[in-house]
Length: 460
Image (cartoon, rainbow, N blue to C red; front, side):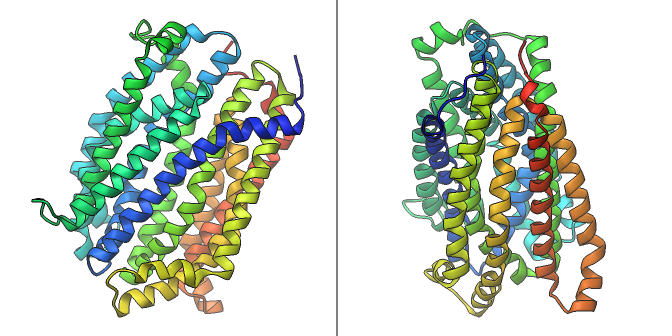
C-alpha cells in the first residue's frame, strides 16, 4: 500500500504530534535558559560559565545512552504500524534494562570530573564549581534515561499530549526549585550552582515517576502488555542496540565536538565563555523545540513506512520541513533585528562591567545563530526522517565525517585565519560551528534525495 495523503491532512497530522513535542522540548530549553540566567544573577557570572561547561560535559556523558533509549519512539511506531502492538511492552523493558546497565559507567565519569576539566585546560577557578555541578547531575542520570525511554513510548503511540503536560509540570517544578535552591529561603541556604543541579535532578526523577504512573493504567496494559512484557529479551535488546547505538554515537560525536569547541572557547577566558553561554541560551530556545518536530517526523516516517508506504512518509517530511523553516525564520529575524532586546534580559539582575562586555560580545554571536538556525532545522528534520526509517548508520557516518572536517579546520585553521585576516578567535570558533551545521545539512539532503531510506524497515 502506497497511499499518499493530501498535504492539508499531512500538515494537520504533523502538527497534532509535533506541537505538543515542541512545547515539551521548548519547556526544557526555557528551563536551561532560566537555570543559567539565575546563576548569572546569583553572582559574578562565573557560575553561569561553569554550568555551561559542566552541562556540556554532562550531556556528552549521557547522550549516547539517551540516544539509544530515544530510538524507542521510532521502533514502537513501526511495531504499531505493522500490527505488532503486543510486543511493545516487552520491547520497552529492554530500554529499562539497558539504562540500568550504564549507570555505573556514568558514576565513574562523574567521580573523575575534576580531572576531565583540568586536562581540558579550564580556568582553575571554575573547576570546583564545574565538578560540583556535574557530580550532582549524575544522580539524575538514571531518571533521565528512564523518562527518555518512556517518553519515546508515548511519542511512538502518538500520545504526545502526555509528554507535553508532563514536561510543563516538570519545567515549572524545576524553575521554582531553581529559585529556591540557588538563592535560598524558607530554611534552605543559598546553594548557587549546587542548588541548580539539585533542582534538575529532582525534575528528572519527577518526570520519570509521572510517566511510570500513567504507563501503569489498565488501558495501556491490555493493549501493549506493559507488565506482561517484563523480562529479558535478547532479540529485542539487539534490535534496540543495532538501531540505537549509531543514534547514540551520533549524539556522542556531536556532543563531544561541541564540548571541545566550548572548552577551547573557555581557554580564551571567562568573558568569551560567558558571551557564548548567553548566545547559546537564546540559540537553544529556538533550536530545542525543533527537536520536537524532528521526533514527530521520525515517528510518522516509521509509522507510514509500515502502514501507508513511502508516499505518506514523504508528505509528512515535507510538512515538517515547512513547519521547521517557518519557525526558524521568526527566530532569525529576532536575532538580526532585535539582539539588544533579547540580550537586555541579562541586565535584569545584578550586573557589572564584565557582564556588559559579555553582552556586547554575545550580540555579534547571535548573527552566527541567525545563519545556522535554518540549516539546523533542515538537518534536524531530515535526520529524524532517516532515523525513523532505520538509516541510523548512515546518519552516524555523516555526523563523524562532517564533525571531523569542521573540528580539524578549527584546530589547525583558526590561528592562521587570525594572523591573516585579523578575525577574533571567538568568532573563528563560532564560524566553525556554522560550517559544521552546513556540512551536516548538505549531507542529509543528499541522502534523503537519494531515496534508499524509503525501502528500509526496522521490524519484519
